[in-house]
Amino acid sequence: MNIKNIFDDIPLKIEDEIFEDILETDDFIVERIISEGHASPPDFWYDQKINEFVVLLTGSAKVDFENEESVILKPGDYLIIPAHKKHRVDWTDPNIKTLWLTIHY
View (cartoon, rainbow, N blue to C red):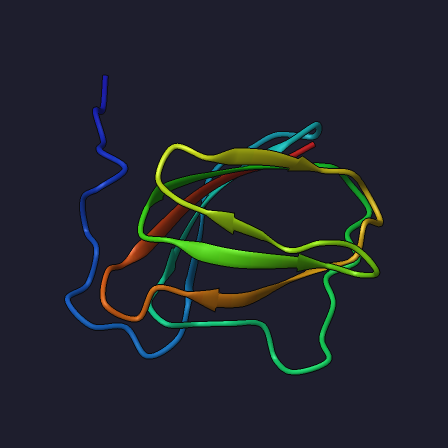
């Protein structure tokens, strides 16, 4: 059995956001995302074909939804983003690594 830790192998400084697939099947993908002051490009909206479960493990972030309120996430917060619900990351904490765990299903 190979034990891994979600908090291991986090670089001290990252230039670009890091996206890592942890587990992938025909039905879902589990992904770890590491952000540090990153945001979606201006005027860019994610429009995903499948649902996404997002839990924030460390740091903080603001997620905007098209034509709706924004939400600020702190450690332990999670949300479910339905397929085709347009959203973007407005900001992530520039001082503390923001670690996300997502499940696309």
